[in-house]
Picture 1 (cartoon, rainbow, N blue to C red):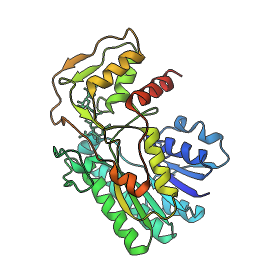
Picture 2 (picture 1 turned 90 degrees about the horizontal axis):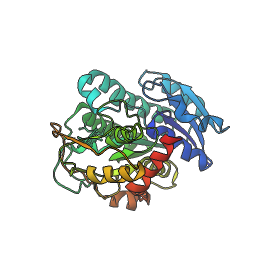
Picture 3 (picture 1 turned 30 degrees about the vertical axis):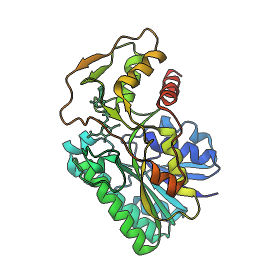
Picture 4 (picture 1 turned 120 degrees about the vertical axis):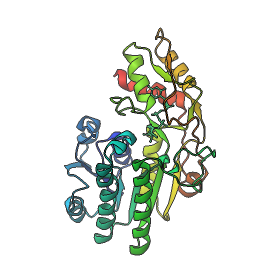
Length: 313
Ligand code: UD2
């Protein structure tokens, strides 16, 4: 069994990753500054004797270093981040601090304390608004936001440090992740979290455009499983991989599933398409299968049912 430091442990993806690591018998040391993470996401984990939670800011020099020096983990899963593309555009300096500087500090801590592996939360945002589908790992990287640029820079920082100092780096390029604990608070939150809240409150959802736009929606439980594999499977080598399903689902299909989950719900309202919105997104899942033996196995319908059940609880 391994000891894993998870940064951003109280966040959406971090808390699910923590839960699955604990379920698999690993020891987890969580780090979070609670800027967007929530302690309530870790209610179950905090009952485990194999979990400890530290309130630290990974972007602050020395903070993670001290934790890694004390804990000597086998791996670091670095999920702490400024997670909103819109916020990165509004405050690019903060984006640099939280999404680039913090990664550099993770790389230095891994080197200094001989951590064997670093798993990093990258994003399909590094590909920008490409229309060249499906997106493979070799698709041209053309970020169109400070967020996407920071994720791409972070991949390079970690891979370069890993190669120079001899630790394994796995960059996980998440597509559109959805599921319980995703924050629906902002208009730019993930569409599924917004839709779930609206349906639950009995309000009509707004579909921007005709609703035929598609995304490669992946359930957070699958993403968390991909993180567990990347951090703990013996013998992995450094690399990058899309973490996606390889299937595209339209917003109309998402709304249709919600309509079945919330009988009697108001019909969706249509509004003009958002400027800058991409029409389709779809990744290829082959490399994650080949390098991690990871395949997403939760259908969008099952994932939405799980979300609706979790938010009702
Ligand atoms: C955004 C981010 C992406 C990631 C993702 C969250 C950009 C360029 N990309 O991408 O990095 O953070 O969000 O999963 O900002 N929509 C509606 N009604 C709503 C909300 C959204 O119709 O109430 C539409 C939206 O216009 C888009 C689709 O739903 O066509 C998906 O929107 P999204 O914000 O969930 O995801 P995405 O891929 O545009």
